[in-house]
Amino acid sequence: MAQAAAVAKPPAPPRRRRASATPRRLPYLLIAPAALLMLGFIAYPVVSVFYYSLRNYNPTKPWRNGYAGFENFTEIFTRDPLFWDTLVFSAKWVLVEVGLQLLFGLALALVVNQTFAGRALGRALVFSPWAVSGVLTSAIWVLLYNSQTGVTRYLADLGLGSYGTSWLSDTSTVFPAAIVADLWRGVPFFAILILADLQSVSKDLYEAAEVDGASRLKQFWHITLPHLKDAIILSTLLRAVWEFNNVDLLYTLTGGGPAGETTTLPLYIANTSVESHDFGYASALTTVAFVILLFCSMVYLRLSKFGGDK
Image (tube, rainbow, N blue to C red; front, side):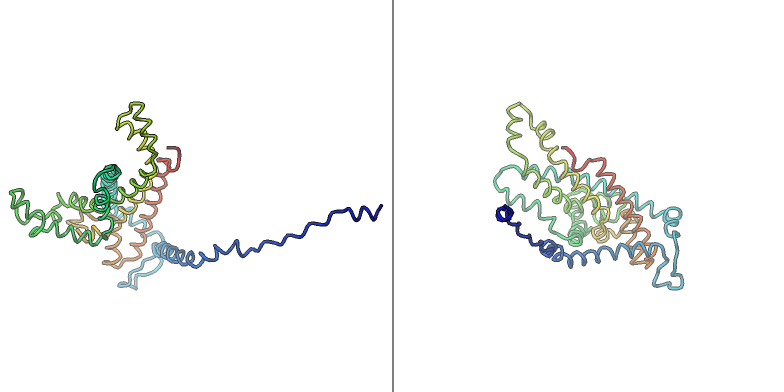
């Protein structure tokens, strides 16, 4: 009986080989060099800015270099009126630019989303300014605003205005002129993102709304706009950060003038570091700008409920 039981006993299952850990780790090993390189390029400048913000560092005045603690930040908030002026102008610049770019970009996206003859060419023309660099955009608009050969010269020939007028040197016209120049390049950004999201809206929703008797305005308000919610939130946030950090266009177009009328906080930081060589104070200004952007971004995402129900 014992022998029969021993014979009837099923054989032990074969041992499973332990899965090699290398295949699971292989993707991480492959991206590790690029990840470390990106971390170095991002982390080192950030840490350096925080470090120098606590120091007096001016290569032209080495005898004053050394640890400053929070002295730079104290000067920013208590003894530097230019900081508050440039911060207010930066907020004004961002709100006006992003608002107008969103409005015109949404309108353009709705237009080129329709079916019409030459739609491909129309889309190419709408999106082409986005491919132009900021400095080249500034150069184009500097020529357009030139008092001798630009738009004002042709307007003067038509009896609209006077000869020799420069919109970029007049404090009453420099802000609208700079706004128009940046709109030309910024509107396609919103048009591209919104058009891409419009392509995913189901046509059945519009057909059902038409059957129910909904007007075009109601279709836009109850179907199109809720579907575009996340795209609008993300694009406005990204564009607001980019516009806040806008240096190339304003620096080339106006240089922050006239009389500092178009000096944003990043442009003030650039002038402080490059022209005045006060890298410690410029690092403190950069740290403050970073905290402001981070706080505003978190509040905006929280209030807009990004990623929530549409």
